[in-house]
Amino acid sequence: MLEISRPDVADDTRTFDVAIIGGGIGGTALAAILARNGVRVVMIEAGGHPRFAIGESTVPETIVGLRVLARRYDVPELGYLAGHNTLRRKVSAASGVKRNFGFAYHREGEPFAAEECTQHPTWSPPIGPDSHFFRQDVDAYMFQVALSYGATGLTYTPVTAVDFDSDGATIRTASSGDFRAGFVVDAGGMRSLLGEQLDLRIDPPYRTRSRTIFNHFVGVEPFDRVAPPRKQHLMPSPFSQGTLHHLFEGGWAWVIPFDNHVGTTSQLCSVGINLDIDVYPKRDDETPEEEFWAHVNRFPTIQRQMRAARAVRPYTSSNRSQFASKQIVGDRWALLPHASDFIDPLFSSGLAVTMMILNALGHRLISAVREGDFSVERFEYVQTWTKRSFRYYDDLVSFSYTSWDHFDLWNAWHRVWCLATMYGANAQMQTVMEYEKTRDKAVFDRLEQPPYRGLQAVDNPRFAAMFDAACAAMQAYRDKEIDATEAGHRIHVALKDSELVPSARWTGWRALDPDNRLPTGEFTLWDMTRLLLWGKYASPPHIRGTYFTNGFAGVAKEAGKLYLSELRHGSGLSMQVARDMVSYRNRDWRRVGGLD
Image (cartoon, rainbow, N blue to C red):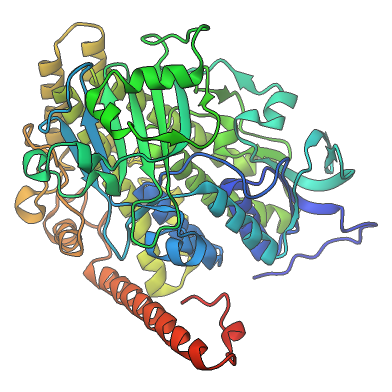
């Protein structure tokens, strides 16, 4: 870590290099990154901690992105969020486990049919599994982490205005006076202060037009208790062990349990319903609670799952979920992704985009402070790749809504996302493994070079061509030029022509089989090894040497470390209980905060 020299200031308790407006996971993670690397940073939060928040479900690109941040910026606590095993031990046992993305298709008035579901398993240990963040715990934890590295934190301190000048900005608050900073980051989400003050908001230029009703509940049944048995639906992972998506024509519902693992301290489950506003316009004569249950009761199996559910807070309802900003970076300011744009909760893209942008913004801000140069040009990459990511997710989500007209069309379309997720996560994971071998932080620069930029392999020319072809098929279906069967066929042709789908013989992937509903197979340690071996030795030339460059050795090393860590933790707890039965003396204070 390099210390940053600064001129003397009259009151250094009110003068900072960077001010972050907002105390959610994005703002606090950035504050921890900056403070750890010698930047004077203040977090100014209008509310306090703990606080309710959504954005709870991670994806492989989120958890690997957290590993990138932890290693690149020397903030190991971000790594604790990257896998459920460390999350439940080090941060919050009230967070849930996510071992799969489950998708169950429903028709109004009919019970769920076992053959109309798909699943995409998440990675097994040591890389996964993914998690359901209980955000009030996770956000509060990261706020504390940022403070521990030297950041200043203010809560219950609304910012009323930010006045910019040639040397920086004056941040004015309602209750704590004014502060000075060289740069301001707005991490305030949809109600972005800078978005309003600088007149950045524009009509969303997005195809997706959806709205949301959501709440936290107790008493939500695991879907596996009300759905047909596994021998009928054939999915490998219990639906209740992951994020369940109930799909229906014109909308979908999420079910995100926090109480789905042994050792949980929660009884809560997050449930939200997302509706195409052109199919389901909002009615003034219906409360959010009434509309929520009206949709639940349309589908018998969902109704059974929710029959004993009781809300723990008032229902929240949006108008249109999508919003957008004409600009994301400017003279001495930037918006984090959730303060700039939003598409839809589908595919849990918000956290993944945020982690990608924290990686790009972190080193730019650190360099800007060290060099005294906050020129807009330095931050243009952040603008470009934030916007490009949201444009991609808009197409992905918008055509997903279209695909729910027919289950077979969804079964074809969702393979595009499965493939993109694998390549996007692999690009980040092999970078982490390369760093573990070399300890050279320059390896992280590759994530801002072709074909690794952005998320979901959008920077890979072959994937981009395949995605464009799949979107064209969906648009032709939407325009009623072709039927659903032909649209699905064209998507499968695009997948095959891309030569990106892993070999079924080597890996067990069945993404080119239209009748298969588990196109990627599983991601156990054995399955991941098969995939790595295919990528390294049997994949086409355009893949070999670009992806899967770090093989089984790195994964095996991570597996050994994780297993030994869990073993030490379990035995350590047993020894602690035995010790406390006979003596008050201990040295636990010497180990508090340790990595194990």
